[in-house]
Image 1 (tube, helix red, strand yellow):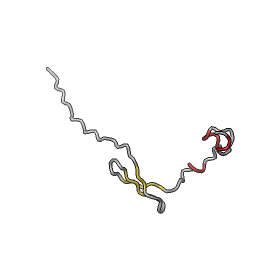
Image 2: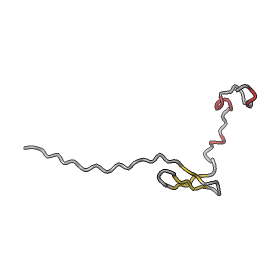
Image 3: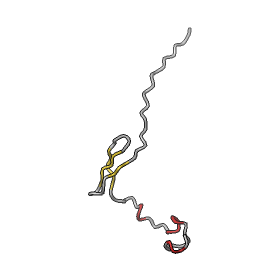
Image 4: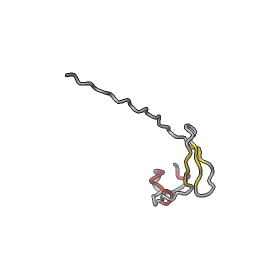
Length: 75
């Protein structure tokens, strides 16, 4: 006896947007951003409470300088 294979129709794949956010100027705790590509709107926080700006990382780690001197040091 031959087996019959029933193939389920595949769900349509939704394209993924690579968002290009245009964020309004800070006014309060959050600012509204809108994607230029798909129009999605999202709220963005106006503060860096995640500690991004409070890290204790030496200047030289980010600039490659041996010390924290300004641009007058030849770099």
